[in-house]
Each structure stands twice: as structure tokens, then as C-alpha cells.
Amino acid sequence: MRDAIFEIVCMVALAFQAQPPAADGLLTQPTVPLDTRVDAAKVTTLAMPQTPMRLTPPPQVIRRVATQASEVAVDAECFAQARAAIDRGLVYLRGSQNADGAWMRDAQGQGSELAKPSNAASAAVTALVIRAFAQAGYREGGDAAVAAGVKRMLAQTRNKNGFAPDAEGGLQTYVASCCALALAALDSPQRAEALQEMIAWLKAAQWDQSEGVAPEQDWFGGVGYGNKGRPDLSNTQMMLEALHESGAKADDAAVQRALVFVQRCQNKKSPDAAAWARAGDGDGGFVYTVANGGESIASEVAGEGRYGEKLSPATRSLRSYGSMTYAGYKSLLFAGLSQDDPRVLAALEWMRSHYTLVENPGLGAQGLFYYRLAVSRAMLASGMRTITDTAGVAHDWRCELIATLAAQQQANGSWINPQDRWMEGHADLVTAYALLAIEEAIKPTLQSQ
Image (cartoon, rainbow, N blue to C red; front, side, top):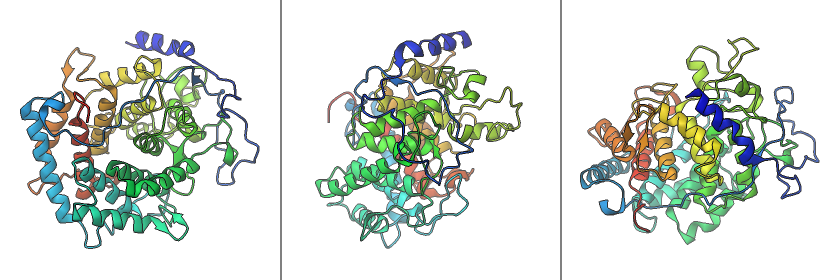
């Protein structure tokens, strides 16, 4: 298998080449000094990024679940199980909504590299719940819970100066992406202006030449948590999804800058790869971030240190893991790479060799529901009805995901993760993740909307 992966990676040079910087300004050098919020001593310089010679139209945006099994590649029993789980979950969420329209009103969230918790977590969770309702067919104009949720979400993220996703600065980008995804799912002309304001904010939050970041530097193209924090793949993939769901084209400059960052987070051996990737096994999976020399939570879980600092500097590498690999895979597709692109194929090979819905590969139960949502979104984007693991077993990912989640739904309609890292001990958040995952699995793909 390792030889096959090596052959795939060697093909990268044929499918990618550095485009002339004058093409659209993507690879030009900055004309302003490096932003003072960046610790220049931690930033690493890599080879000039390789950009695709051609782009493929990204997967279709589908904003509503199917109304009947014949629209999806599942049987009637599986479809009925999904719809029943969605209905029960939405009933639970109606009951857990706060009087002011929010969900998890008093919860505090914390970006992975930030010490100060933020009260803006509620706005993000409220947005995720709104998206779950909207995709199930409930609209702001005809559903009291959705209307109250949208009103609260916008009140919490807008002020007299416009969109301000987190006054404390701790979760700005995460909140902005969630809010944009909620409004995109509502698909309402009434909210089109607010949605475009959010998208503009996200594009401005991206690290690029306007902050003095050069294309060769490992921060380029990514976004992090609030107040221009260190970029990571989790936030960058959410921004890319928000752009995609809002109608951005693959050749959008922000999308292509994000592609530079995303591809650098992949465990691959190529001319523009980071040192940790060149020292690794080139398994095609993804890590948490390439920035500041690279981080992987799977390396931390494995006892090698989040930065791989417990390994010998000469052989330091980082471990790929499930949630980031599925997130990276769909991000490559959203950014216009084709199904037969070497980097897409390498990520798919990792997914095939680590296929499971029981755990988040590399992290166990940590972030399990976030992982399942990433699986569902990535597999829908892939267009594949089944994924065949490296043992030769074909998995009907839709019905396996639906059955797995339905079996874990609580009597009151909610879901919860006993491993509460990343707030997965909160039933409202985990229920939103589970519902969104099931909804991805039954979006109509056999017939147009």
C-alpha cells in the first residue's frame, strides 16, 4: 500500500505546477510588513505553493433533505429511520431553546490556542441548530423556533457598525462560518444582504498578503479562531464550506488561497511539503494545522506531543486523523480539485484504510460527532454511494451512518458524547451535529430539487 501511495504522491508534480504570480495576484509578494499579531519566529517558510493547472466545478449545493426515499440512494426502511431520528431530534431542540431564541445561551467556548473562553459559543450553536431546521424544511417565516433563533443569532453578532461575530474576539471566525452556513441554508432573499456581509467578513479574516503574509509562509490562506488567531484546518474548512454553500466559485481568490493552506496540512511528500510531512509516511491524511511548524491532536493523543516535540527532531512527523482528513478531502473538492487529482486520491486512500463510524480515527471518542458530520459531508461531496475499505468491504455509508446515530439517540431525542472534549458533553451541540450528519445522508441526489 505504501508503494501505491508513493506513486500517487509522485504524480502530484504532473497535476500541479506553480502558476505565474501575475495570474490573479494569488502568489504575489506582500507590500506591507508582517502583521504584529504574527510571531515571525514561529512561522516557517516553505517552497512556493503549487496551484492546480485547471479547476473542476465543485459539488452541487443541496439545501434541503429529500421528501421520499426514491430521491436518495437508500431503501425505504433506512430513509424512514433517518426521518424519524430527525423529527425526534428537532422536537428535543424545540424544547431546549432558551426563551430569548438562543440555544446554549450561557455556554462558553474556547479556541484551541486561546486561553480566554468566549460567550459567543451560543451564537455558533444557535446557527448550527437553525441550519438543521432549515435543511429539514422549516423556514423563518413559518416556524416560531427558527424565527426566534435567527433573531437572536443576528442580535448577538451585529452592532451599529455591522457584522461583529464575537466582541470578545475568541471565536470570531468559527461563529462567522456557522452564521453564514445558517443563512445559506435558509436561502431567503430577506437575509441575502446579511449573508454577503458575513462572507465578506470571512474573506477579510483570511491570512494573506494584506497582513504581510507571503505565499511561501505556512500561515498563508488559512483562518484561525478569533482576532486573527493562528490558522488551522478546522476553521479553514468551515470557512470554505460557508463560501461553497453561499455560491462561491472554485476560482474565487479566497477559495484558492484556502486551497494553498489546506493542501499543506496533508501528510504528503512533495516539493512544497513541510518538513514534518517529508519525514512522515505520506499516508495522505490530514493534520490540524501546518502553521508554526505544524500540529496534530492525534500526535498528542499518541504521546508524541501535539507538535511532535517528543520525537527526534531529525525524524519528527505528525499523525493524520479522521475528522481532519474528511474535512480536508471535502475542502479539496470544494476548491475545484477533481476526483482523480492525486491529492484527492491520497486522502481517499487514507479514508478507505481507516473507515469506521465507531470512533474518530486517531482520537477515539474525542470529537466523535464532529467527525461523523465531517464523514457525511465528505461522502456526499464525493458522489460515492459506497466506500470500499482496504479489506475489500463495501460500506453503504448513508445507511451505516443513519443506523449508528439512530441507535445512540436518547429517549428524549437528543444525542450526547460521554467524552466531552470540544463541548461534546453539551446535548444541544451534539444533537445539532447528529442531525446535520443525518440530513447530509438523505439529501436528494437521484433527482434534482
